[in-house]
Image (cartoon, rainbow, N blue to C red; front, top):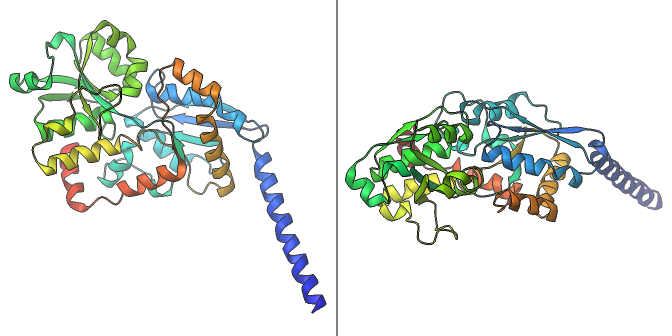
Length: 341
């Protein structure tokens, strides 16, 4: 019995030492390393602004204090960067991908070109939960939704690609509410849409308020961009009187479709992910560092100065929300596939 007790004690000590060694190894893995943060859009837009701000602070919250390098990998509405993070990036905890969360729904809808399985990413978190607004140029003469619907004036909207809120929100509102929208898609990012708007190439915008108030400040202050509708699940605190798209829906089906798109482009729209099969210990390190950054006073001060709204969710919550999207019932998926193609 005494020998058995000694053997058990030795085994237990071995497990504890092994666990401590592994934890120590992971904690020191990042020392002297560089983490790449891959942004799926061009520089100057909201996704880029969030990532560069996070990148300036997250390194100090990671044991070993690695350097952070932000890279832009635009194209196909950020699908190129999502595919890269899934297929090409090494699962070593040194690459963090950031692309538009609407691509999760596009996977469900069978969008060509998607080479990732959203259920297999390792989720880090989101810095903010978007609230999409619809804006039109002052030159259109449109002042509210009612007059726009009555006039049937077709307004060209600038879009990036299916799967982005710049495209999905106008498409669903056109299909469910009858808004006379002509979507001009294919811009590389919201910065390019802004250039097209200012040149008169397009006259309408669907964008998150969080991004709009930061990167479209000049157009808002001059009155050249007028917000007329919010496509959200509930009114944004800053817009208690701005009409809700849901209030114009005349059927339960229309309400469900609008709500689904708003949800897709809300709590899951700004995901940060690691490649599949990234070691669990490193996933936890990056998740913790991300949420610690969201509470960092220096980060929050810089985000406030840049007009970046910080309303974060952690990796576990983000993963849950994505998996809920992937479980949408077939009838709803069929409708969305028809309207968002």
